[in-house]
Length: 326
Image 1: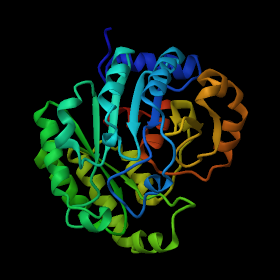
Image 2 (image 1 turned 135 degrees about the vertical axis):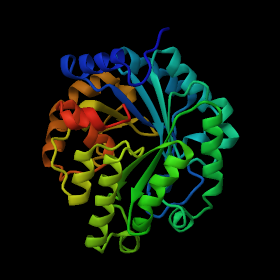
Image 3 (image 1 turned 30 degrees about the vertical axis):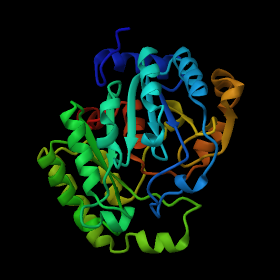
Image 4 (image 1 turned 45 degrees about the vertical axis):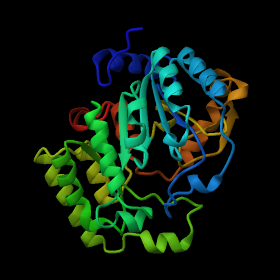
């Protein structure tokens, strides 16, 4: 099957047709498992320890997703590389004509990169350099080695950084690291989930707003100077001002499926809308009104995938010109 490359005009036209004409999401965001080899304090996915779909069930999901019109399959949470069947899942997605994407902490990347020949997009979480061990509880060295191994295997790598009080002084260093390594880099602020423990927020929170704004202004300056930051200027200004001033289309763009097969609205609003056993199309149709209510009542977030792609959905020209991970 001839699969359009990520970022191609054909893929963009398919996405527009799916979202604007058929009124269905184009990306399947799949929390592929509930296990992780790290214990990051600010993340609660590894703490859920829930059920995971079988390989066959995931194949069925991918078959149904393709019939539904999905064009991109993104595997993430808690750590996808812990699944032995990940290569088979990515291969099945490619056979169904889907662009494949993976978000990983990178700890197992060197060990398994040779198995990921069907992967189109690779994102690795790197939240600091000197602060990495304190934030993630492990050495950064295996992650950097994994990124190099992925590049040697021909993959373009995106480093994703969650900005917190722990790494605020390192954001510029991370951009320079990305430039030196030949990767792209993205930023988004730490999101406060209701489930986050108070002591974690107290430890990770950004308290010096003046220092924070100075760091964000530096990122804007580096973006304008063509450093490899994929975020748009519009988004970086929202993050600097801590103002999610956009119309959210997260549930119009992305179909979210959890590790146990539940279908939810988004990463923030995790209320189950249905289950894969009910059928994607049936859940999508029956949850239309509830999705609208959830979006209208949501206080908003600054997850870059939601913001940037919602702005693209609304044809924001600056984002169309400067957002670099499509």
